[in-house]
Length: 114
Image 1 (cartoon, helix red, strand yellow):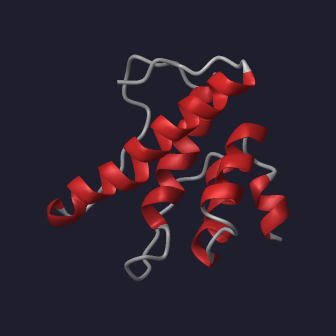
Image 2 (cartoon, rainbow, N blue to C red):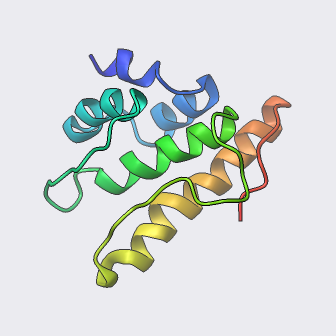
């Protein structure tokens, strides 16, 4: 099931995830197919279950594949203020930096994301 879930992603994002993270968590494996179908998803799960990366990685995937244009808001992610800084740094900024490098090394375009 997890392998099929990762096939939803651009191949370079899938490879990065498998190298850096490993297997999707149960939350990720269950949520990504719904998110990929364009459904609105509300995920409640314990800390450390992968909720934040679930949302951010799919948003990055949509930007990379050109499914959504850059330059305007396309994703709404709600996080408790206390956790927001860590969520952004660990689950958005780090993957963006690492994926930009992966795409550059593969000779593929990566969108300018600010």
